[in-house]
Length: 477
Image (cartoon, rainbow, N blue to C red; front, side, top):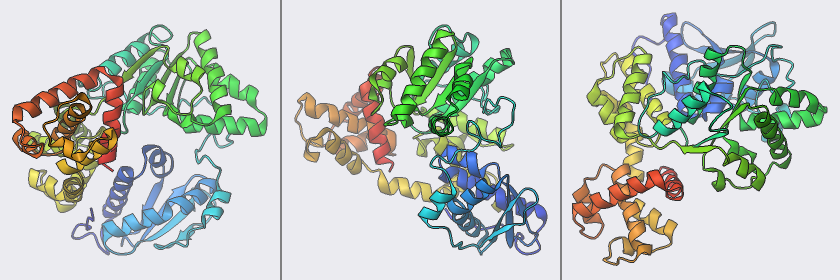
């Protein structure tokens, strides 16, 4: 969506307009970039905006980070600023201390891929093990804002939340390891941070570490290069609680898997707790050693599902309040019905609505939400139709699209047909009678039976749940 800057925010605008310009820029980048990239590289930036909004200077902590941001993100940041403001904005990058700004124009001559690679390590993660810029004190890397109190509970995450709270209250006992899996943006990371924050609230002296799997890989590489495995093992094997996100990134990394296996065994032996997340259940992980998969599966494995309607509404209202805004319930229902896939997309939609409301100085309403999300709604309406769902499901289960409309009833056809009906109800605005008509003129009660049957089995059958996740991600592009 292209958002114009508000009237009166052009040349000569007050300083708060400059801060609003940067705030909206990072809100849009938060929606567009993967969460880890945004939190690592964009969120820590400090911006200084000139009064006439013609130039934005971003202050960066050290030379490596400056070079990496210039190579990887400067062009995108500049384009986003121009899109918001409606005219070019000069972008500068500067070190926080001593060194002069390094100018990057709105159409920067970015380094080639080879130059960018030479300027940065293979794993672009700051403050890895042995990083001289890291403070001497132990860093737990927890986000203090991600707690059980700020996590909206619903059917989709109730079991995972209950297990996580049990771990936080009695680490080292039941559910060790705790393995949480689910699609992108469903709250897995929030849950593991909540475990760490709860344990530290109860035991401030506990050694807790949250880390993304890519960072563990980076730490293994650096320990190998610098021959500092003793320091590496001391760091990881001495923890009381290890929280590690996205373990699917260990795929095909043999040395990393070996070191994680050793850390895993050492932590369990001293009754420390391990909580992991992944995009799939343990046995669904590809290119991970069998002995490691068996360890992942030896404790408790729980899924987080896409949030149901009522939970999505509650998330929107609560998140809006945390941003000092009130979202009317009918607007929350409108947004929740149109943004179904995950919490991250919900939050992105909310940011757009709040920014649109603020810049246009209008109260939040369904009409305003419709205008703010018009690009998102247009993409959804264009991409996800019942015919698209039927074709995608037919291809996935290797049946003919014509079988979706036929009266044939063997399980090899009836089952995919029911799954397609379920997805049509979940991903489109079609009514049950409309869906029935598109499946060969079937009665709406047939569609309702299929929707309820697949929804119930999704809660019980891990394999079906994984298949549905794949189909949903395929349909949403």
